[in-house]
Image (cartoon, rainbow, N blue to C red; front, top):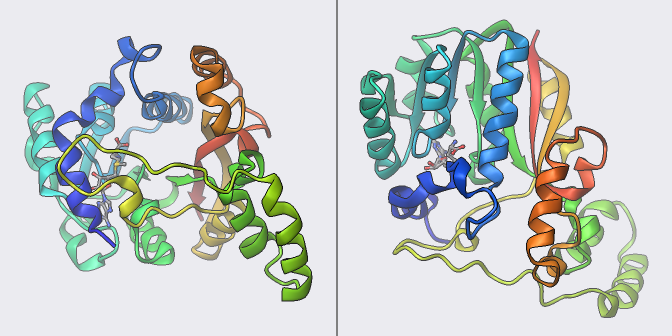
Length: 291
Ligand SMILES: C[S@@+](CC[C@H](N)C(=O)[O-])C[C@H]1O[C@@H](n2cnc3c(N)ncnc32)[C@H](O)[C@@H]1O
């Protein structure tokens, strides 16, 4: 499997396009990151959060947006390419680039100096959990940045969308997750009946325009929201809520049939906040509070 860091080093120069508000209706890719950031910013305002630390800052767009909201900020990333772009965003916006440092969410030893700059009111990792070696270590390392009462925002790729995608991922989810405790005989009967009804050749592999390995070629795990809820609780936090984004009004394989209507209906759904997100969204953010 290709290295996660190589993918991000290569995508760093063009990553900022994903946050361009003027391109929501026209950008080649659905503007999922834009909506993710909007939801977190709204929540930070609602909760009166005054300081935030971000792990896996990427090109620096989210943490710059938060510095512009007047928050005390800090952040790190393990991609030198991303770090360079993020530091430049800080310089361009009049913020201190030394607040952004190298750090690996998987390795506590790389985060000690950053943890010492805390505690912060909130800690977040957006787009990072799919790539970590240990989810448990990631939550523990994040938790060190906040004091009791502090808020954690952890983004994940939602495995529940598989139940609405009617493709290879549906089969994998049913076989490996939903029916994990069931006997192979029963599972195999279900598999042979279901497979012909599902689009087993989908999803197609993503094509990347830059030099590094494509997103499909790196470790990019899906997570089950119920399991994540248990994980944060096991690490001394209380579950608050899920924030859902990247809505799929239809199964993804019908997106091109619906064309712009798929995009526009998705954008409308981004304004909703209910249980449908668990099945219609490819991503979510779990919010939890440290006990
Ligand atoms: C999808 S991008 C998201 C960037 C940013 N958080 C955002 O929301 O735009 C994921 C970022 O996490 C970084 N990353 C992945 N695994 C990491 C790890 N173990 N430690 C630190 N950063 C990591 C990548 O280099 C990349 O910059």
